[in-house]
Image (cartoon, rainbow, N blue to C red):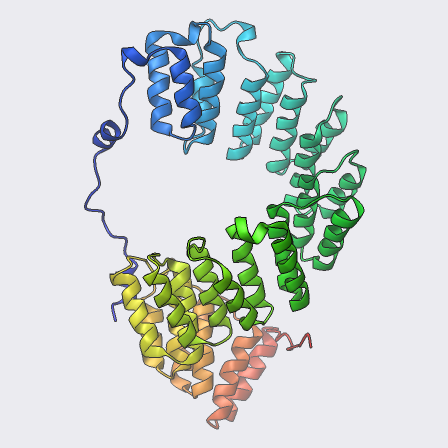
Length: 490
C-alpha cells in the first residue's frame, strides 16, 4: 500500500500548455468579416460564460470603437452580463469603470445597474453594492422595480437584512421576484420566523415561493412543518409542485425516516412524471429509500431506472445504500457493474465502497480498491477516505497499520475524528500503549471530550490498571469533560 503522505501530494500535469498557446488554439480571433455588432451580440448570447471569448469581444469593441455605434448600450449590457456570469465576474466592474468616455448620462440603463448589483451579490461585495445603490438613485432608478429588487437581493445575500428589509418596505412597487428574494435571504440567514411571516403577507404565492419556504423549514430541521406546508400548497392553494419542490421535501422525509411517506412520494413522482424525466428526483428517491431502512425497495427502484438515465450519482447512491446496510459484497458488485456501464468513479464512489468494506470486514478488498483509486482512477484521497481507511484497519484489529496511515496523513488536513476512530479500535482490541499515544495526540489537537476519557478509562480498566483508570477519572472531573448520555429514538 502506498504511503498516504506521498499519495496526497498533487501531481504535476504533463500536458499543461502555456496560456497564449491554449488561448490561440481554443478561440479564433474575430476577423473583419465578422465584425458587425449583430454577430458579436449573437456570439455573446450563445457563449455567456466563456471568459476568453468575452475578453476577445471586449478588445474588438474597444479597438474598433463599436461601443459608440447604434447598438452600443445593448452590446455593453450584454458583455457586462457575460462577465458577471463568467469565472471572473469582477471584470464587469472593470468594463463599467473603463466605459466609453465621455459617457452620456443616458448610456447606463436599468439593466446596467441590475447586472452590476447582481455581481456584487455573487461576490459578496456589499460595500461596492451600496455605492451602486447610490449611483442608481442619482441616475433616476430609485423607483425602478428591477433595480430595487436587485438591491434587495444583494443586501439579503450579503447578510445585511436590516438594509434589505428597509429597502423592501419602502419600495413603491414590488413584484413576485422581490418577495421571493427577500424570503430566500431571510431563510438563508436562519430568520425563519420572519420569512414565514413575510410569506403569509404575500398577495400571490407561486410554486417558487412555496418551494423557498419549504426549503427553509427543511434546512432548519423542522421536517414535520415542512411536510405540513407541502400538503397545504398542494391541497389548500392547489399549486402543483415542480421537481425542485420534490427535491426540497425529500430530505425531510429522509430525516423523519418514514418508509410509508417515501412510498407515497414515490407514487406521486410516478404520477406526475418526475421519476421518468428528472434523474435528480430518481437519485434522491434511491437515497431516501436507503436511509429510511428499506434496501429492498432501494434496489427495486434503482433497477427500474433505465441504464441510459443512470448517472454517477445514481450508482453512488446505490453503493452508499449497500454500505449503510452493511452489505459489502453487494456494494462491490454494484461498483463493478458501474464500471462495466462505462462510468468513471469519483471520491464519493470510493468513500462509499471503503465504508462498505469496513463494515463487513472486507479489509483486503478495501485495500485493493484504495490502490485502484490512486493508481488507476487518479483520485486523490481526502481526509474522509483516509479516516475510513483507518477505521477499516482498526475494526479488523490491524492497529499498527491503522496508526501508520493516520500518522502519514498531512497535518494540514488531519482531524480529530480520524484519531477518535483509532482510539475506539484500541479500546475494542485492548491495546493500552497505542491507546495512550492516540489519546495524547487527540489532546494535542483538541481539549478532548468526555467520550475520549471514557474510552481510555475502559482500556485501563480492561487490563487491570485500576489506579490509572481512577487517576483518569479524577482528571476528567477536574477538566469538566462531560460525556453526553446515549439515547434512542425508539
